[in-house]
Length: 148
Ligand SMILES: [Zn+2]
Image 1 (cartoon, rainbow, N blue to C red):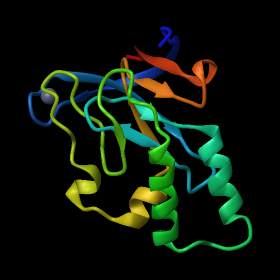
Image 2 (image 1 turned 90 degrees about the horizontal axis):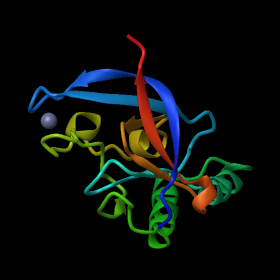
Image 3 (image 1 turned 120 degrees about the vertical axis):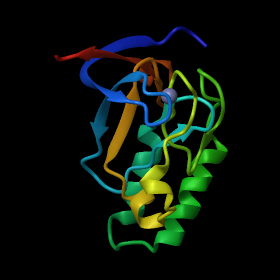
C-alpha cells in the first residue's frame, strides 16, 4: 500500500491506565447514526468507509432496523475489509490500544452492549493510526497536534 497522506488535527494527551505513558489522541464525531466503523484487533487503525455508511443509511431510511439486523450488516462490511495497514484485522468489538504497552482499553467498561457499539458516535484516533476508506484517496494517517 502507498504511504497514506497525513492529516494533522488538534488533540490531547491521555494517560494509559496500564503503563501511565502519555497517549496522543483526538476523535471524530459521527453526526449521522448509526455509522459503521471498526478498529483493528492489533493496531489502532480504523475502517471508515463511505460505501458502508451509505448502505447503513439506506437501511435506516424508512424504519429503525433491529439491532441484530444492523449487527449482521456490520459483519457483512467486515467480510470485505482489507487488512489494517499498521497490523491486524478490523473486527466488531476491537477497541483502541495503548501504542506503548499495546494493551487494549476496555470498550464501554468491558460491557459488550450492542446498542452502544452500533450507535457509537465517537471514533477515537490515536496518533499514527491509519483511517482506511474506500480507496487510497480516502485513506489517511492521523497526526495529533497537542493544543496545550
Ligand atoms: Zn500503556
